Image (cartoon, rainbow over all chains, first blue to last red):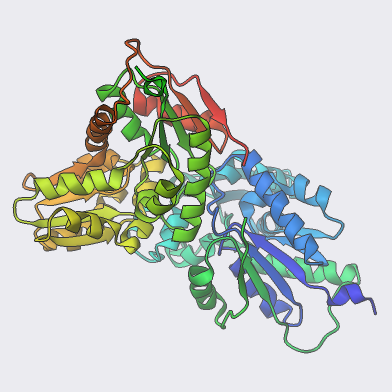
Length: 268
Length: 268
């Protein structure tokens, strides 16, 4: 039994969106400890330049490695799209990311080989989803759509509001016109819009939410690397944020369905 | 003639919104040099905590004072709402801000003494507009409305789009129900939504945009302090931003109607 097994998993995001991945990890791996980092002072990343996002990603990676994590989970599609090289170069531990997990799930799900990707501006511009999907299958037609208003709409709490439906109709139009049968929700905020998006896309279209796929991949890599936790009690998690924690705690408790006593403010 | 007169004016904002103030300053005071700072990497400020915004404001104030400015113009309502104490404590030069200028103009404009304020979440929560309006006149009824989706809608370019009209209708409903005759556009992005807001509010309601009021106040304070520039040639301006300058330059050239060759990236 290696001590490394009982070290925590580091999960990071630009804000609260990555908590959808934490929820999936808690459900799949209830004994694994999680150290979460949410860069709530500098959110959103999705409209910033690649160089700026990569600089922030390096700073968070350094922080989590100092927390002695056994694995890093990049739970932010924008960082996964533009900063994976920076993160993996710095990390002596395995790195999993939501983007590759989502792309793999979409490539498996499509039947007509036509896939839509909804993501932030920076993620779409990076071309990372197209590369990740094409590395899974070469026979795909891929239609990408930047949806810069989805994150603010979710953060306003308008997840099932006429404004959100009208916005989603506009963003989905070119994607549905391309007759895709699978759509990747390429930002961790977007699963909260699943009811609206599902109604507009219809039953024939599969919506891919990378949180549960990512959790399954974490489980697989931990086992393969002999890093799975051997503790049998429910894990204690800790959360670090860069803006004052009140709002994060409120949204987080709603998202995770449990109290979050252990939220710390990081002064950067 | 003091050398101080030929020093530049420092104008700062969380991003591009403050350029509406720069435009007004350029029109009113074409010979005054401007050093502009836009914190484009960390925008938006309007959903961040007061302490985080105050920390950023202090960092920018320090930067501009090192540029040897003769006056500071806080062209961001959110910073004006929560960080004026920090900025004025640090500054040996006069400090003007858009919030006090907007409040004074609204207090002068209203006839029925009922004023609406549209602003970011942080500005509304700070209560700064209510305090500023009440310090001008004690007989006002003030209705404040946070409009967190307006900045993302402007940045998406949807300034005259059905989604924006529907969003504006929702935000304006409680303000118009209170029968105000004057509405302060309490964020430097909002003047770009003037056509939509004007249609919804109707001819009987005056929309107050603080840019020109701020420029008039700058002019007045410069003269009173014997700081007005004596140069007679058109001034050269410089711009500093924290994210890569391409997008800032594009939006800025559109907003100011002139080329912006002198945009510098600040690495923080």
